[in-house]
Image 1 (tube, rainbow, N blue to C red):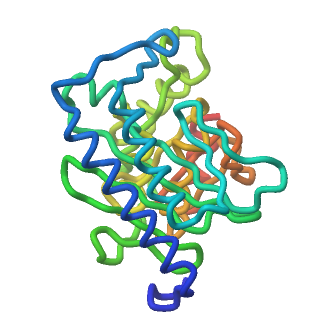
Image 2 (cartoon, rainbow, N blue to C red):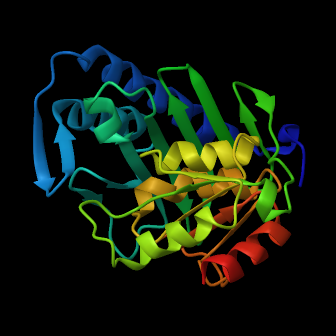
Length: 265
């Protein structure tokens, strides 16, 4: 992995723009606290005016600088086609249920897809003013300082996070996987923000995170962060990760990832 000063001028431009846009979205989320209304997209799947205002502001900020780029986002945003080589993948509020309940674990997530990979990724936590940023092949930072995954290799010492489908039932495979993990890892949590979970794997705060129910906007930026900090990203069976398929296993090391594939299978 190269050092951050090896980023190309284009990467610098993309990453700076993503950070600016994430901050714009994050400030709007904080401004909306206490005055938003809530509706359901589906059972237990919430959306607020804050989500929509944040996404609109992020898109406009990026469009001003990159009018030729496409967009894919959580709130009914799909401004791209098969010929679009570069498009931004945006989650304006990852952790909406947490946000609605005043639980300070939510974030803005922005990734840039170019041709066949995620080029830059930014996750911004407005409650802690923490900006996680990564550039493809050139490492990752937290508020400008380099970060690394924990390096943990042992299940019994690992802290894990899992995403479960909304409105799920005890027979869901994701629930059974969660229960298996409880007997293998030191501790397992469900936090409600996939983006922050991935940022925390990347920065060494937790050791692993997995899900089978996420969307590209939930994981695009975070997957790059983990890959750029010594961690590993695969599908749950250990095969190659695809940001457009809801199947993710992230770990602080490849060895821990391999052990998780066996433990959760």
